Image (tube, rainbow, N blue to C red; front, side, top):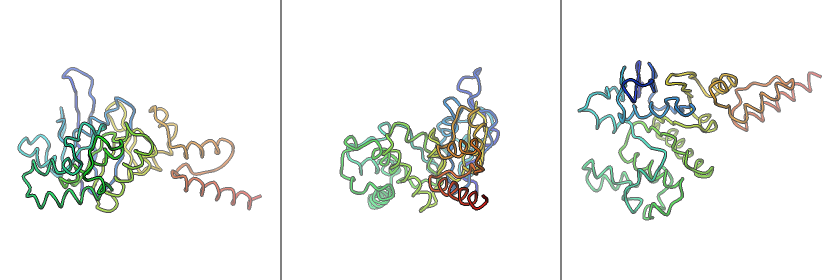
Length: 282
């Protein structure tokens, strides 16, 4: 089942301006983990905002859970289906106590207190923040704040979570916290994840990578397929993960290694296998 779909999606911020998106057609499966890459101005954040109906198409159509986002009377259903997490968690945190912040959207939905309590507890547990339930958000680290923001979205029980560069303002430790929480959600609950990022190592963890350029889809495929196209990525002002760059340099020196080994473990295994085969060959 396709949970998020765009068909010939085009968007302009100004009526006579250049298109931020131009005839983009994508289908994102329920339960998948998709990363969207692109340099600044490529259209990736504009695309993300269409999945939550923050922006509406200038042309074409966006479907969220089968609902056309242009149907004004279905806006709540769209946003209940696809929750949105932004770059700066401080812009999403509204309460002075963590558990109250997570409960905020549920209270606005008019849910009974016992249901709110259950959802808050489950959402905090899902992002590993249960022990911080009574803490003040402003005293948390950046990674912890972002996990609270994610918990606030999870409490609404969306089918998908769309994250617009959620780790851009975090240090490496905070980035690792957030990505680990997101991967666990996708793996253990089957939640659909769309991650907008400029970190190649984060994108390499997804099931699928979509690369945007000038409002269009430039590359689309599984991470090994996309990141092995090093020259094409460089032409798009992007770089491949460090593991792929290492393998390419070794190939330039005469090795014959697959560029599809993305993780450190797979990269090491590829090199060791080649060295073993090469030594047997000589």
